[in-house]
Image (tube, rainbow, N blue to C red; front, side, top):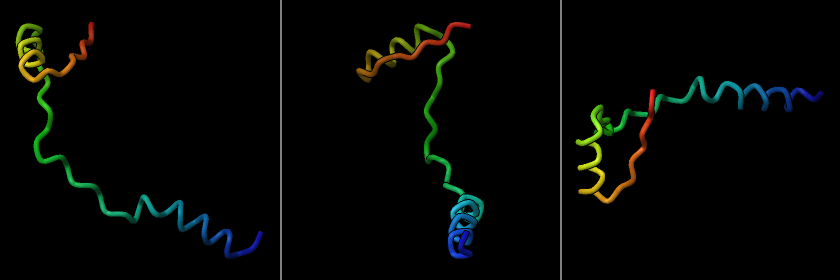
Length: 54
């Protein structure tokens, strides 16, 4: 294999390591732990709910 190909592969592999970390979101999404509060918020905002049963 040519050396330039190997250098390119190494550069692409090292890119995530050398790239600066992304900044955290300014305001994290709230997670509701009780169903009535989550349902009220979903109705108020018009957004669907994601429910996980454990």
